[in-house]
Image (tube, rainbow, N blue to C red; front, side, top):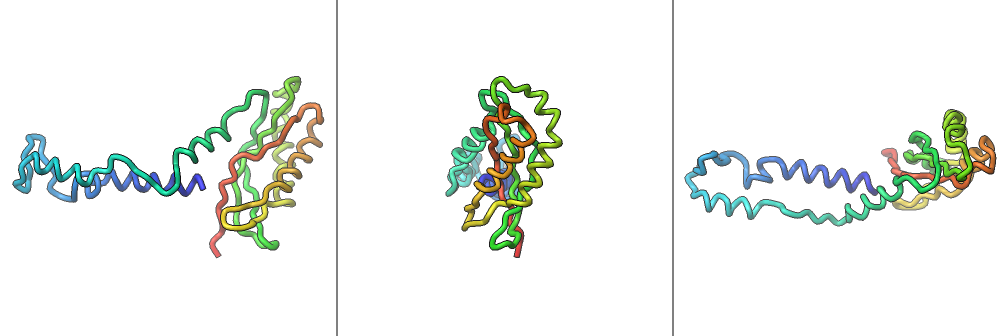
Length: 183
């Protein structure tokens, strides 16, 4: 998941900035005059540091592709749209609460729609979306696999009932970072 991968990368970046990782070991360090407190020659000390310096980081998960995917999903579309504030969707398995998914509901509008009229009704759209999410939650299918199709259809139906069908071209769920409860 995006969040786990970014957390792993940030922990590694913080760790690599610590003296024990970045400077070739803890303690001592070097002075600005080029002499070492351990009596080693400056060239030898520099070569020791290059042996432990991490110049590139390769993780099992491809962080760049995850970041690009997230940026593409959150990028503004060509036509008019309204993003509702982030909401929590329950995630269930066999009727039991497993956790929550954090999503943004994006309402794509027809080109003739009055975007500000829709924004004035955001509170009604949020109420309808939250009610739909809690009546039709995401379903845990398997390891990091969730069925959100029925929830998305229910949300779209409720939003379209508040706005006229001529205004809404598509309702999309963006994000979906799932946090499972500890058992």
